[in-house]
Length: 420
Image (cartoon, rainbow, N blue to C red):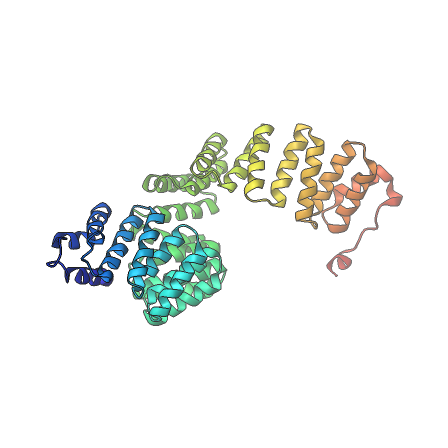
């Protein structure tokens, strides 16, 4: 609001001197994006305007393009604003926000750094830099920036945002303290109740989580995320019907969010309504072709249905997007069920490379080698399974006993030896 007023005052100083009208100055500072862009363009194109005023008009036009989601054009306008008004902090801040929205976090942080060099006490600058660090996954730096913002300008929102960072970091006690301080400052802040509810869910306190999320919904009944988070709580306690009702409402309020569909698919799985689960996972993938969890979830359902070609296709996408030992293990199991033993062996071998201390992977590969009559490799894998997992390796001992006899079995370790 303060920045808007400053912009309006600066632009109005030249209103009578040039061809641009006073209405253009007012519209350049308007809330409607298209109106703002058109008016700011007229000011920018007036060669009689002072350089700083034209810079501020570029800044305001950049805000208009940001509103429209045209981030590259917005950035180009903020670039021009900075060239013409290099000490205008909001231009750096909003260019940084545009880079954040483009997931170019290092460039965003560089812009916030520049803004804070000009005005080290700009609390929102510290907040926005903290948010960029949070999205980048550097939670300690995010917390450091939120803390400085709180020191400069304490508010319920800032405590809530720092609480979110503490929660995501797994630091539950400072997170709880921040949410409670936010609620003390502003008992009507739905985001604080949402954050504390999410924290209680992480701590597996479903009753406390539901109480907070109910309050968040009472305060902001149009917030889709609060319904989705409450659905997560219901799902955690196996109340799948209630979870689906809340996911339905979240999707109604904010359609197009792939993760709502992925979560509702999991709730349908809980009800054993596998057709609807598959449909929701498919919708999640349609909305976001990189939704790797949805590929994995749908692949498991296809595998359970013995639709191995579709299962393998989904696990292949999961591996492409987020390779992990369990993704290779699941594809290996599907290849095995399909009779593609060499492909299954290759998958289990990659799973072992990623998780060499998981005994069942050696056991499963050993079974495949045994099915191929490769006794030497099968024996080696069963022995390795016993070595890395003496407690859970009964199946491997039985297989090894069949292949080489009791005399060649590795000696059993007692519990004390396993604990050493």
